[in-house]
Image (cartoon, rainbow, N blue to C red; front, top):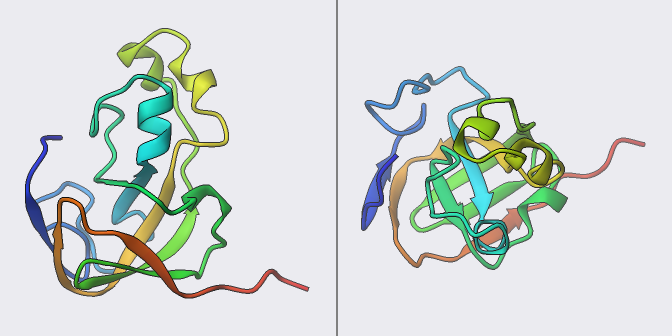
Length: 128
């Protein structure tokens, strides 16, 4: 992972990324910038594709659609921290419990620029 000023998202994720696949629910990993800051991490350090500020991602339900720059994403599921996190820093897997980030898929392609704010455009409803 490396910081960039902008990225072109396509249906399938980020072209060239190993998780790029139009049918996949794991196209992108979104992590809250607030989590990065709270844990003393650098953006991209825990292998997230996009670090998003100002939107509490962990409270979003699967099926929620968010706008980020020109792109629209659909939240698919929570990303659980794996043991790889402890290779970054001992104990990080535990520190990331409940805040590792959300997986998403691209539903509308577009450019996302550093500093673009994320906003919910369609909230999913909790199952009855």
